[in-house]
Amino acid sequence: MNRRRESAESLATGASAAGDWLAARGFAVAAITPLQGDVSTRSYFRVELAGEPAPWIVARYPLELAAAQRRFAAAGRLLARAGVRVPALRLDDPAAGYALLEDLGPATLHERFGGWEQAPRQLAAALRAADAIAALDRDAVAALGSPPLDAALLRRELAQTVELLLAPHGVAAPELLFAFDALCERLGQAPPVACHRDFMARNLIPITGGGVAVLDFQDLRLGPAGYDLASLLNDTLFAGPEIEAAALAEWPRLAGDVERYRAAVAQRSLKAVGTYLAFARRGMTRHLPLVVPTLERALRFLPLLPETAGLDRALLERLRGAGRAAALC
Image (cartoon, rainbow, N blue to C red; front, side, top):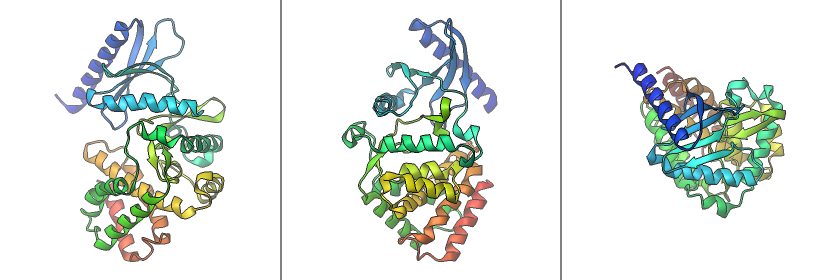
């Protein structure tokens, strides 16, 4: 059986099982359609329920992700109380591994817009949401159970980039690794705030009136104050200099400390490149076009940060070349 046919059969089986779960809970299913999932082992289905005008989303969590499902529900309640728009959770069944969620629409900001210049109202709404997230009670966020984005975790995130980008292309120079460690150390020492952890266009849905709803928030945790802003402006949709400057001027959590934002961009972008390459190694290549522009965001700021300013320019050019080569794999 080829992989495509096996995948289609697996989706059909999953849709049937999701329909059975709904039926056992008293819902009459008119139609159920598998959706393209994220890169986790979760799966999603759009379901039409008899007698209801709007569809819903069924999320299927493998049993090994039961803790993530519980964090999703708890984080959603925390965010909703803070005024952040999130999908309504109609039914949550961690024991079975299913949840029934509000369907907010088929397209994320990434799919709707080619750049932040085309979405000024949505960007403003996203900045307000990010600020509301950062203002969450730190004890309540820590109680969700996700480890903080401290220096140790920030370093571990870059290990994948070293393995899949730097080492194969001969760019894992000791001075570069030492500088990255120092960058993570300083970034992790800043007073933490609540962070979504993946606050970017692929996890934001445009809603009526120019607002946005936030998805994929089960990894809500404490982390650097500039991290979510760095994600928003430098992942998938890339902000131009004017938009970036305006957002920084309005972002209260940084209190004018642009260097902290730059450090977050550098670490986050390098980490994201490693993540995209890991996806590609598992056969999911749709993120490869993001490798080069994401790496360029890190390279913008590495020469400006004290930990990385002394790096040889030729080494940074080799890093740029490594990204271009890796994106062609």
